[in-house]
Length: 242
View 1: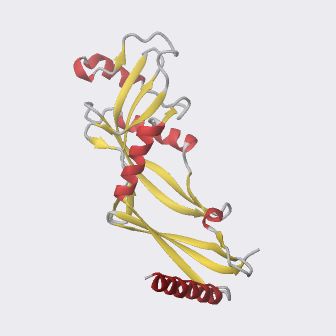
View 2: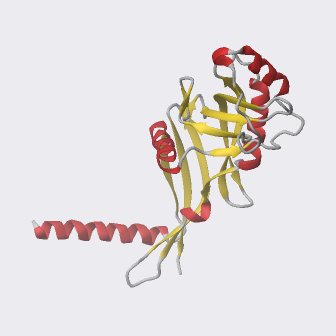
View 3: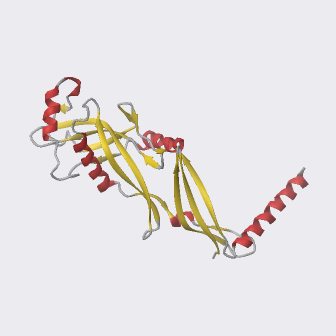
């Protein structure tokens, strides 16, 4: 059994050396990584469980856009639809901010792959302090899409989030467009673009015994969206390492 194991190991080693020797002459290859929706669900869970909910400021997110008229409607609606904090005592109590939630109004923050597009519903809760009104509290979810592109200058794959629409819980869409503009402006200022992969991080050196090292250099990257998953293909060149 021991001799059989040794023989198999020797054959595998010889095969690897032959493959690397051929590759060192300039052969190209590619590696495909498949990322499923379940993978991103686990990532989102980890962010909320270990890193705390992401939060960013809405202050000066969109100059000239205010919630004054909308806040007046919310304040006068009473009952469960009133979002104004009557105990507002100044800016130390009410922060112009939005905080991501795992779920709001039955919608969960997630990443979904459908019909060639990346959909990213974002559940949130937030506060805004329009002039002469006081602290407006709001919650809901944003219909968001992600577009991927390769930044040639900085050699990285990036994503850009685009808020298409915002639905506020219990308000029948009132104020959604204004909130959407503020959220998008805040995302553009604080988050976009989102760096996903740096090309130099994908390159690595394969150590070779009694010979020069072999370097696998990432030369290109592409992605394909299919229902339920995203495939990322990385192209490599085999080169003589140092």
